[in-house]
Amino acid sequence: MIPTHPRFEKVKQSATDVIGTQAFELKQQGKSLVDFGIGEPFFNTPDHIKSAAKTAINNNITHYTPVGGLPVLKNAIINKLKRENNLTYGSSEVIVGVGAKQIIFNAFVATLMEDDEVIIPAPHWVSYPDMVLLAGAKPMILPTKAELGYGIEVDNLKRLMSDRVKWVIINSPSNPTGKVYSQQELEAIAKVLRKYPNTFILSDDIYEHVIFDKQAFCTLGQVAPDLKDRILLVNGVSKGYNMTGWRIGYGAGPEHLISALITLASQSTTNACSISQMAALAALEGPQDLHIKQRDYYQNLRDIFCSKLDTIPELDYVRSQGAFYMYVDCKKLIGKYTPKREKLTNDISVAHSLLHEAGVVVIPGSAFGSSPCFRVSLGVSKETLIEGCRRIKAYCMSLD
Ligand code: PLP
Image (cartoon, rainbow, N blue to C red; front, side, top):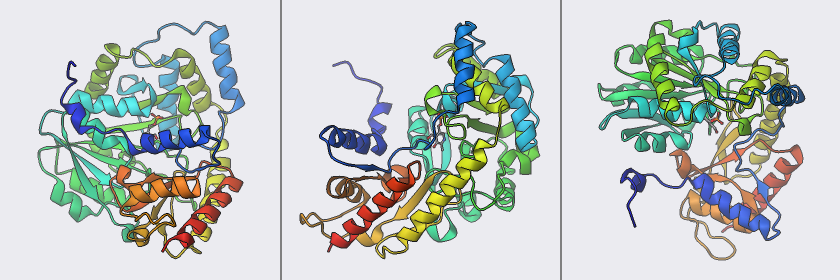
């Protein structure tokens, strides 16, 4: 067998996929499952966006586009960043990509060298550390605490910072905790970052439009305009407009970085799908009231979930402030036995037995770099949520 690059030995198949595959097989066998595993919005793509895609096909917008995106879409992104975030970007500072994921991955590939470090606050989105490893650099996990709402502690950030740090990641609202950073918190982080002029900052704003309790969204560039030439703002239409399958994300940052991303895309994927770009244009320029309806929906589910969890003494949680996830602490389950006399040794075994014994799919916290916990997605119907909570409670009561 001809070997692949040794880097692949360090990169594991994501726990999301492992649980997902087992869940898929159980579903095939006819088992009734409550699926809290999916990182998908509950809603479908709005009709006006679908119509725009159909029109694009009929108008033959089916050819290559400029690698960095159709100029009309780039303009819509520039307008959005001005309108919603009060940030000013020019066309050469914006790129459209195949989802936010491609922009982030390519930014790491374009900038990271061996021994470079990337600071990743944990719990973190599953892909960040593996992307860093694939780019040949070192993920530096910065743990955060549940009792502090999973926010970055500035002193801990200072301790990890050095000239070797090429990127610091900020993801607000966060997947998987729903942590939302306030203006003051971002200002305190910016104060540390100012001292390290060779460090980029990734502001992953993909859940911008899902924020609860009337909290305002704030992105780092707004509070620290002086850091603009080091910030890569990443956003997209996947979560806010229910367009995960269309694969459109975008990045806004310094021209030299965007230009490297365009070169990388031009030699790998070329442009993002032309039809999806026209759909994303309709999303950004069409009615925006869907965000309020969706936010209210997820907030209601969060409230129901928290009130149900309050009746399960074995589980603790931090009330999510945004995104559509809840991060549940299951340390009181560790060491207990299932009715089949299997000992729960970590959150992977909890997720495994929840799946097989209760028919509930959750993602173990180890995938997010913080254990023993599990993530529950609120991208489900109210009935599914209530049924899932009932099953989780019955499962917890069955342990001894
Ligand atoms: N960033 C975070 C925090 C995410 O949770 C996700 C998707 O789950 C992405 C980025 C990637 O989004 P996209 O679908 O636009 O690639």
